[in-house]
Image 1 (tube, rainbow, N blue to C red):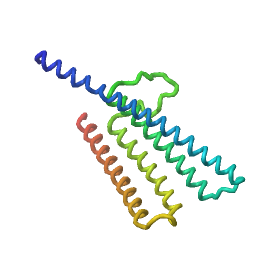
Image 2 (cartoon, rainbow, N blue to C red):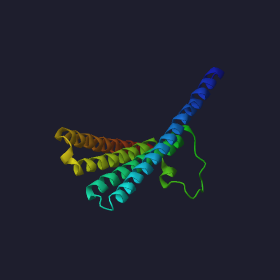
Image 3 (spheres, rainbow, N blue to C red):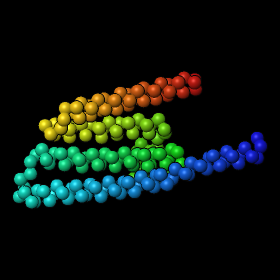
Image 4 (cartoon, rainbow, N blue to C red):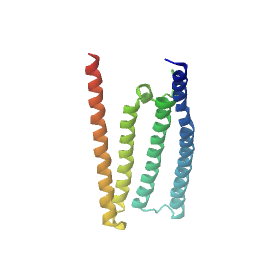
Length: 176
């Protein structure tokens, strides 16, 4: 192998570090979600005190589902930030750290895809639940499209899981 091709390979391998600012940007987005969560929680608490404790169960449920939605998106961000950085940029030196996520020890691109699709389905489920609770205020075609999109997410996740399972079986068979 020539010296020029070795330098090219090193440069290509180094280029993975170009993703580091992208992950830092997602950390900033995580901070914005923390801000939104606290603001929405403050509005809920303020509404309870302003109404003398007489806030409707539906209104409370919609706000709480919104808070859960923010938490699930934040969890998705953590999976992308930590899992993506670990998989595509550089190993995190977390051996023995008491807070190391359990899933990080066996993360790879396939596992990350499945975890992300599962998280997206969870987020979509929360949105769909909010839609059903608030259905009387929404157009029928809006509800229909949200259900269709949710079903597409489900089918996509099942297809990805099936393909991942088939690929893992192929790898296992080729090792024997």
